[in-house]
Length: 476
Figure 1 (tube, rainbow, N blue to C red):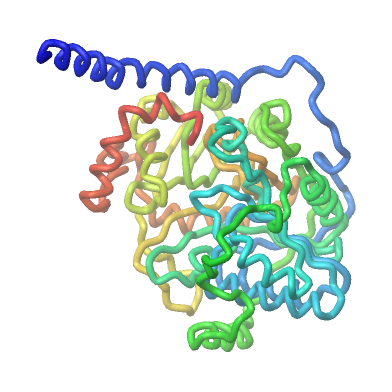
Figure 2: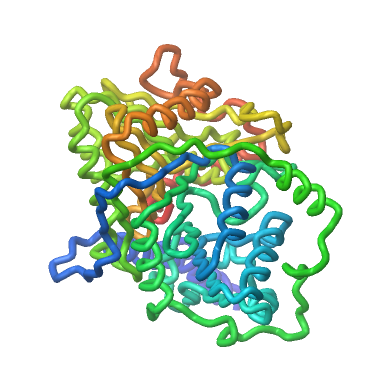
């Protein structure tokens, strides 16, 4: 009897310690291969996926979060016919309530208002009970990709696109979702991000791409999601304003900072096709072409820096041509994703190359205007680059495999606009001035610089996941 118990205990332990990890390893390797396979058939095509215009467009950087919130509310107020919004995250907080209330007011005036929000469960907040309030006010809401765990690979595909378009004439695209930490309003942690305000015909192309997503098979209406009706929403987006919201609203009414416009005469919008599969990813190809065209230097800001073999090969190719490359990303102290820093820490040797510098933001507040910083800890979140002091890219694409292979992203390229490039370069230099050299620059301290300032718990978490970072980096 005892021997039988020992034997079955041994078998159970063997299955647990060997069998289960092997099954997971095979499953993850299959997902990895599928996410990066070379497509041998014909990729989907649509006119709105890749649109280039040489008509003059007024463009302006929105580097300050509060300014970007003000610009969004101004665009919404100016709307006369239609408003389209698409976001990865739509929080339930002060900023989202101010935006939602503004949208409801426009819907009451007869403006067609539509919101498409990704259904990624770790960050999803706009539950059907909450969306119902918006829909009762005339705002249409849809969810992108409600796949559950049974469709594990399909569940990995998300729309990471972020856009607001008004009347098919004006648009804001960039790294910001809807939430306090994107607009310098969180008391705990805020993002240094970047958006592009665009006025011109390319805005209509962005709406056409929105229509493609809105009508896709990946979209579900809130009414089709099963919910527990007894679970009341913890917030009413259209309810009476709180004292904090009244204070923010009063500050917005007095807001005087105006965007500094320049003219882009070669504006290029590129986005990925809806759905999973590497054949639908167009943004990576457009970025790779820009990298290969660079002649002198490239400066890139990305909150996460995780490169796999294809990305490393692209990087090495440009470095071997003598092009200087600078990356600005987050340290462990400034990041919102310690697992991404774990992957970078595990691959620092790949970034030890001539003409290459990697800088990590140190997490301190950056003085951007007269407003006092709302929090003590900040992290970079911009997805942007400057090529040869003339060409600018702003969008939603992170330097990681998820953006390259799994997510739907978008970018806007403005070519041959030294004025816009100079404005972005000045912004990047301000952030670089509060960053630490990780590799390539004088005084670079590698791993020590990467973890400096982080609290012990976060360092422990990063060290725990670091052995698995390379194995699972295709999901980062």
